[in-house]
Image 1 (tube, rainbow, N blue to C red):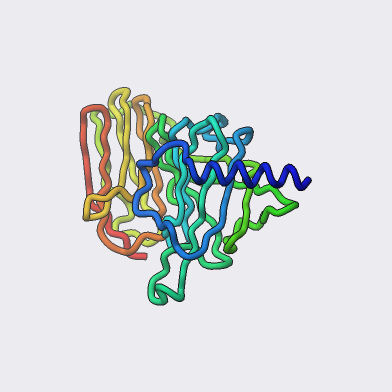
Image 2: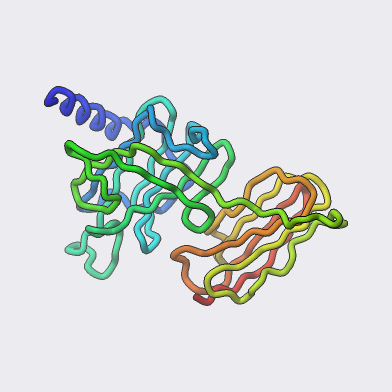
Length: 257
């Protein structure tokens, strides 16, 4: 047992020292705070999206309940993933939370490189089962210096729901006015597609920063509805943009939680 433990620590240390690939999607994440914990995902239990492993080059980010990105790593499909969970340091920054506090629930976001799709609490769910026993903590809550090992991670993106039954196909492609708008908890977006199209439905803040990628899919003609429920976003104005083939639409959403 001691030999196995030593080899595990050595392999994790090497992965931290020589990360597989640089990440590019999740930016502005906390790093190098005063305390941290370590989460690993073995090669034999990759994160699953629609029943298949996420693509090499995909990214996994860990968020605090307040929506702070406090760690990110790249899945390369060739070696285990090691994700550092960075903790808050109240002694150095007493007025600003910069990472996980003890007891915080660890929330995950995934960006799948092959689909260019971001899945998080506002557009899907991620189920995680932690390994237990030996030195591993299986609670899913942050503790400084803890070790976590993921035994199973499954990503379930929300889907655009076809409006059925179809009495007739839409004559034009369009984005209907969001309803309700203003909204408090969730808003429904309805899209009419007159022809087959690659569809992207994305929400931005007024600074032009992407805050939610709701849909990236190849859809048949028809009418579709998508419900967006913002997670840990401040009240204010947001812009939803629809790209359907070579058609572009946008409208302003008013979020008043």
